[in-house]
Length: 409
Figure 1: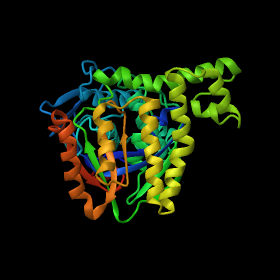
Figure 2 (figure 1 turned 180 degrees about the vertical axis):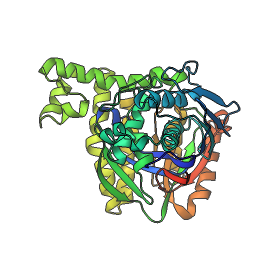
Figure 3 (figure 1 turned 135 degrees about the vertical axis):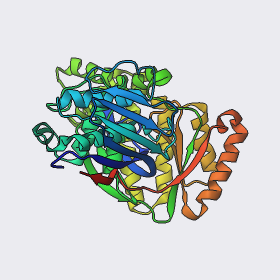
Figure 4 (figure 1 turned 45 degrees about the horizontal axis):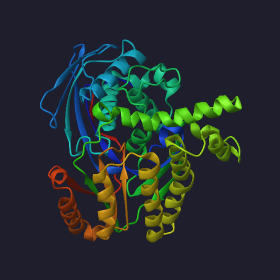
């Protein structure tokens, strides 16, 4: 965009991680969809050195200075994501970022596993960039040349890592990847997209069955990537770095991501297994990463392309098993929801997202989706009455990626 806008509005969808659990930050694969539900941002330049953000989902607005050092929003506060965006953009594009008043409205439940936090990062960044004319700057053009690179950079706003010449900054304290941001910015209507990561690479587009929908059960157990769940979330991420460090030390290599090590030779996966050993969490985590990235994600896409819903369900069931027994990020409520979905007739069902709470998707015929959702919720309520009081059922098909709604100069 050649000149700064005076006002802009964006819609950013939530995302459904069909498969690819905790694979992206290690260079693995994911099969993704943008949801039809999401967050709408309406922003206007205010001529001040402050970004004000208000949301219909929370009671208290925040006012953030145009500074590369913004304190006071730790411990899982939702404004920590907004502060990370503002401070990162100020640091990476000095003297360019303009103050704004931004109103946020959402149809996406917070901390649901559909990545409302990353949607907040994407939407706020896109609004501030439009109001500041950042995309016309030399620094932007040198470093960001595709939607995939844009998504990867916005993920770095969240995790604090550097992106090419754009130096890293504080982030929000999670060691995550760019899967969520990629789904939001690169998803396609009525299709799933398969990506590999580090760097972000589109591998294929998989048509979604025309007569099916996702029913998403939001468990009522919050899936926060910060706050109380931060340590558990980062353990899952750090384990891949620990395995990589063991590999590099043993081999004398300097691979940056676990997938680089695995892809270094035909024998590398078995060599890594030998280095890690037979017991403990690292071995289970390694197996989950290898099976999910190199077997299950491709197999699920193949099954959908062939119209084989039964085979797709078998692959998804294996993914759910390895998520629980290898990755270890499930809680009783999400285990039960996946099981209950199959008992109620879903073709496939899987927990998704960061884990330690959050949501489970189920694949069902569209004409049966509403009735299925009622049965599923009732079955869940019988086993988890307390959690079910805060549960929600959502119906969606793969929807449009993030897009501007309006732009005024």
